[in-house]
Amino acid sequence: MNKNGPVVVIEDDEDDQIVLSEIFKILDYKNKIVFFKDGDLALEYLNKTDTIPFLILSDINMPKINGFELRSRIHTNEQLHLKCIPYLFFTTSANRKSVVEAYAMSVQGFFVKPDTHQKLENTIRKIMEYWRECIAPSEYGDE
Image (cartoon, rainbow, N blue to C red; front, side, top):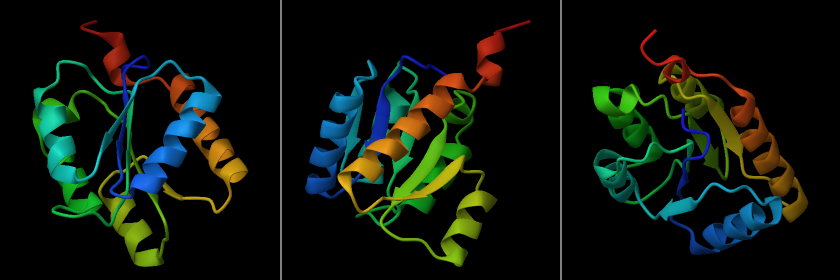
């Protein structure tokens, strides 16, 4: 896990992108925030970049491929899977079926977007701090 890498946000709603940009700026994390409006563009970036992202925040309902399909493609891609990029769903609503399906696909978190700016800021802070503390297998190199 590259704790200094970019945070990949897959979000097709431009208003949500603006709000998230503001929150990351307020929280002053040094990670670059890279937005994609659909899963195809995110997957293309992940396959081409040499930089390992810090984490992926993905909406579920998106054009082209949805968040579940994107997670499946990343999880079954050996090159991407070995990069140990935490994959979290960050969506407007949840139901039991979608949460169960997400965890069956080995996502590392499922969050419903809070309805206020302050709650959203608190959620992003908690996510970032948790993953900054977390240790991944990739941190041990070739021991």
